[in-house]
Amino acid sequence: MPKVKNWQINREMEYPYEEKRPKKQVAYVFDTNKCIACQTCTVACKTTWTSGQGQEQMFWNNVETKPYGFYPKAWDVKLLKTMGRQDWEGQTYQGETVFENPPAGQRVKGHLPAYEDYAHPNIGEDEIFGLIEKGAFFSGMHNAWMFYMARICNHCTYPACLAACPRKAIYKREEDGVVLVDQTRCRGYKECVKACPYKKVFFNMVTRTSEKCIACYPLLEKGEQPRCVQTCIGKIRLQGWLSEPGKEDPNNPLDYIVRIKKAALPLYPQSGTEPNVYYIPPVHVPREFLLQMFGAGVEEAIQTYQTVRSDPKLLAAFLLFGNTPKIITKFEHTNEAAIGFDEKGNEVVRVPFREPFFEREMFDAKLNVYRHNTA
Amino acid sequence: MRNLTSIAITLLSLWLWPAAGAAQEIHAPYQAVDGAFFSRPDPNAAVWQSIPETTVNLLPQNITQPSLFQTSVAQLKVKTLHNKKWLAVRLEWQDKTKDQAVSLDHASDACAIQFPVKEAEKTSPFMGNKGFPVAILHWKAIWQKDIEDHYQQVKDLYPNTYNETYRFGIQAAIDAKNPLSQPKRQTPVERLMAEGFGTLTTQAEQNASGWGIHTDGKWQVVLARPLQDKGKTSIAFALWEGGDKNAGAKKNYAPWVSLILEEK
Ligand code: SF4
Ligand code: SF4
Image (cartoon, rainbow over the protein chains, first blue to last red):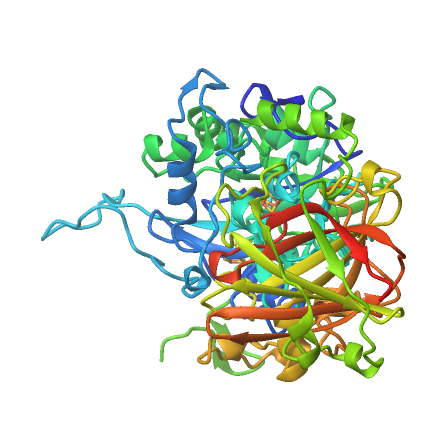
């Protein structure tokens, strides 16, 4: 089996196909600290792509509460169990990926969920980890935790779904790294559903084929960010292009946040798929849990995030989130504002570091009305 | 394990397929049945009573992944006949469950017969090989249900499903004309070609027919196609037991067996 380089686990690994990176890689940064689980993204995606027959329980985008929320049920608990011990030594992953040492007769380590596992997309929502003692009160820091985890297909560099398909019905686009199921080739073997560590391929029992997130490629192709990104109420998302390792551009916000400042981390990088949704870890969650979920860079990422005030360039990159439908390929900042540019170098967004402050009179003389919301 | 498999595949690709059916021969006698018989061939038709039956042993497919290591069905009973224009092959196997649904939790029963397009000796029984394609007829229990009953809907399997957004829905595979996803179909048998693992391709001309009956814990299925060979050819078999979640490469198979087309 060919050996490929996976920068997220800092080593070579086995993969059924040779390393072949796309010209540019679709990638996202999600700031878990800002997500409010409003599910606007989920509904935007659902109404755009999966409202048909056979897609009733299909959410290409879902938002689950960690640690007790899962969609489908227990997907990551099962993943962690399937993968065995997962030690890190420094930045290097010592355990096995899903491609290494799969069970006899299988291409990838995985599990096939049952239909019922998709029946409760909101299971565990808002449930906290830890007990609240009788008489406890809020004193600036909660003593129990949970956080919201928005999830889509990671358009992995080494997709497990693609590796598992015996028909080669799944392909990764050379131009942008989007991973797609060819709906004319798929014969519904469900091997991809079983193999995807993130359970982001779904089986449609009406078309009898597998379907997955398409990264809203019709939008990407006209220079716009996907629906889940555009509609995000919490402005937690930024989509852009990630450069090849070693060819990072500090003026590309994705490269800057992910590869240069390392403030956002892949989800379960130990899977080996090199997932391309990068999460800013929640700052209030126990480190052991985050280490398991986001790999070795957690401590550094949180520190970088918490000291962002002293790093105007990183702050500028963060301000680009959720402020334009356009894909930002380059950014810069002045003392006052972050500025984003599209592929052609046109300015597409300018976000002030400080929002202008307006003070309004309590009484509106023109309308003869008081401006306050209590009667 | 993987090394063993790749050695096995290397050996297989060097190997000239031994004169097909060294061990076994299936005879297809000529029968003066008229063309109408073949349009929906009845597994219980009287004509089958006089045809000799051959028992073929099945193996679990574990040459490529995903694999099976134990057969779900161990034996297949085969009868064939022809009328100089059409060939019909009747398969019978034990299967307690009649599986005619597809979902995450369901797989459909199915069976297939395979013929070499060129010399059998040079054609791999494992889906053919480059330059030596195979022609496949694939009967699917769910396709038959599509015809005799209706195209599977979610409520058939999960009656309490509720949805009010269907009118916005798209069904990409149906629109893309995936042969699996066609709500209206004429035949439960798909005609395919292959030239090696992963190359299975549906054919533009779908002129094969077939029909199956499930009674007393067994399937009896007839597959038929216009006759393309004379004298002697080869045939291979595959079976999928939906109850065991067999699908795709997870199948039970028998490699080439000689098929003698008798003149009389
Ligand atoms: S997240 Fe899953 S479905 Fe998406 S590319 Fe990776 S392996 Fe494939
Ligand atoms: S729209 Fe944004 S804030 Fe709302 S749930 Fe989705 S990711 Fe979270």
